[in-house]
Length: 105
Image (cartoon, rainbow, N blue to C red; front, top):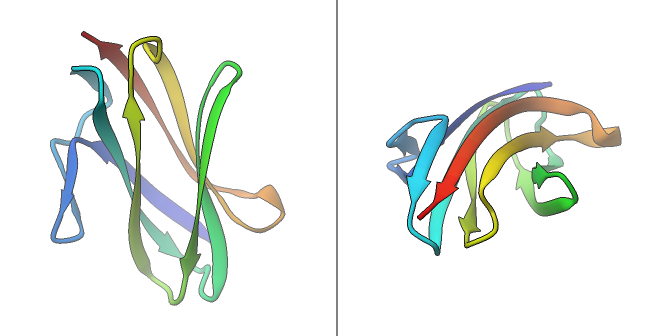
């Protein structure tokens, strides 16, 4: 199994909008991660956002393959810096990852 990941400012009609890897955002802004998961039907995957000791995780079911899904994290003051987003499958296998740089204004 593997996944293609994209990051941006929104998801519309199951596609990423405002695709970028660096973001200057106001506090309280959501940054989205879009994924196309392949070869992982009938499983559960997790989006894991991490920077240093900060981590947030969101579990999602993947009913079929290929499957498009997305998750987001709301960025607040103190969340500035470089974040890694991983899509993790069974036995913590990394299916895909992306790095974003966030500046909160």
